[in-house]
Image (cartoon, rainbow, N blue to C red; front, side):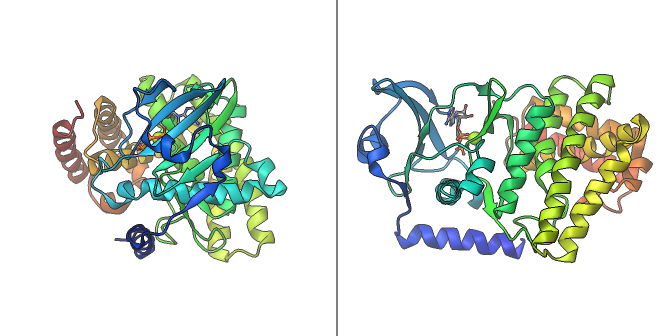
Length: 366
Ligand SMILES: Nc1ncnc2c1ncn2[C@@H]1O[C@H](COP(=O)(O)OP(=O)(O)OP(=O)(O)O)[C@@H](O)[C@H]1O
Ligand SMILES: [Mg+2]
């Protein structure tokens, strides 16, 4: 277990049993007393829609005196066994407090216009109240959308907050204006001296990778893209062009702030790799292959870890196994075989993924 992660988890568990409370905002911002909000159920006449599928919370859409609100209520018992799941509501209230502080500063406020405002939150009551955001889960991509997401997530990183879960259900598209509103898995880190909230141990994870792994490449998989075609390559190009622009800005900021050489070099290397791939379609297709494989491998581990496999997980296996069969040498050279996969032969990896696939078949959510 990563010591940085372990320390954060222990601090959150200790805080939880300490009995302290964390309140964000003023109770006057609530249309009903917070104690009443905490007891509302989906059957209440104020509730016009409910999202009961969350593992640690339920979300109610309220309509009160002509205004609409989103009420997130903590479950008495989280439906997940792991510590990060159990502390995700606390974590989200902590991040709501961070964003409320940041948004009070006009310099940050302008850069955080895609982060939902918090009207009120009370950890011990188990409530987070936000305005209702019209729109729908993000299901289309273009340059403007890529730019809003990456600029926002990199702004969060500059503020010392690393977002891990940019999945489709956590991004709303309101007619081209994107919103982020679920911060259950966003953790503090030192952006000048660490790669992410795991410290310096996992350079693999950063804003663009998180968006690709949790969202973009899963979306392509749902469109049945097994290998890059003209359309998916064009979208990938648009994404990487924005990513280069945003990461170059981040590098300038890191240098101005006198960040450590290891962090500056890491951002510079990532950016240069993308720039090299943007020179022609062949280089871009090679990068697509490496990163597509990487993201499917990472998401398979997430699904297996959470025992939350779906039909999409099985499709991820199809990509991974096909890539291993046909492009093993390219994956190895491109650095796509990392962690447990590093140093394994093609045959060993194919056997490993056959076993993992059998597990994923057992863990199918029904
Ligand atoms: N402010 C909001 N405006 C509109 N819709 C929202 C808002 N907040 C949440 N939603 C809707 O509710 C759904 C669930 O919200 P959210 O992602 O915050 O919790 P969750 O992921 O269900 O919780 P858990 O962390 O327990 O899994 C979202 O996918 C989105 O459709
Ligand atoms: Mg969510």
